[in-house]
Length: 342
Image 1 (cartoon, rainbow, N blue to C red):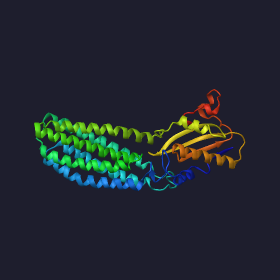
Image 2 (cartoon, rainbow, N blue to C red; image 1 turned 180 degrees about the vertical axis):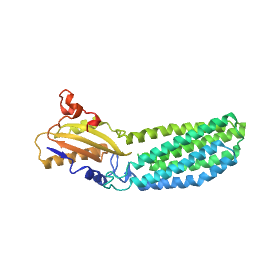
Image 3 (cartoon, rainbow, N blue to C red; image 1 turned 180 degrees about the horizontal axis):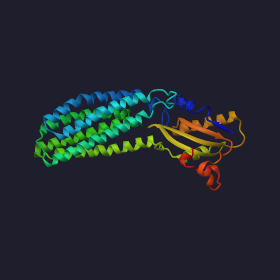
Image 4 (tube, helix red, strand yellow; image 1 turned 90 degrees about the vertical axis):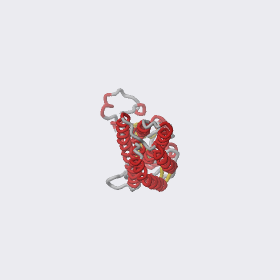
């Protein structure tokens, strides 16, 4: 006897909307308790602040001949583009599931975050290249102008970072935008330091050196973002969830004989999903099996924040497949097949 959840995968995905906030994840309209509307508002505020200041920073960089300002302006250009990408991704992921996209477009926020990360890598590469070129012949830089513009930029960056940080939740999309802002804030601090060094010691060489430091800081922050987005796209196990612990927890429930073929992945950065085969103990009716499956899904949701669970209920372990045929006979619940089996 085998029962695939209550209905099918599509029904299970839609049911996720009805779940409230949980300890480790949320439904379609929230990210660890942060509403999508709140995140969208935060992105718009940051976009307006940064777009408004971008023109002033470009003009200041050209007028004062400061690579640090132009480097920060280039980074801020990527910020504006990144915030636009984040807003588009936020809009796409809010769309409901369709026949063509049964999960909706939830991966759009992960793709948006990855595009943001790649954009940061390109901008950082340009900054490093230009800084090295200027180190051989440091140009004259107007330290006072650099100091004024960089100070104004710091206030804009900090305000944007605070707004985004409060609405970040567990969203990689929001995290990408937040990294843009915090890196810019650090860049503004470095540019202020360069302005002071130029005014006090006439050390124009500090400008390109600071620019390299800004770029390296951005690359360091971007690495974690690209690593996490790639993990989601490659169906990696969500952070904070242990497959062995979850399998043991389900197997320990009353009426469960064994659990196998358990897989964990993420629909989006903050929405884990699970599929597993559950062997029920004793003889059970179809209604009893469905009821037990619902109870197990409630446990997965409340304890681990897994709102999207597909459980194949069995009255005996399923037959081994593929390369499992050549393995020694062992109890099914002790044999963990490789992910490609199912």
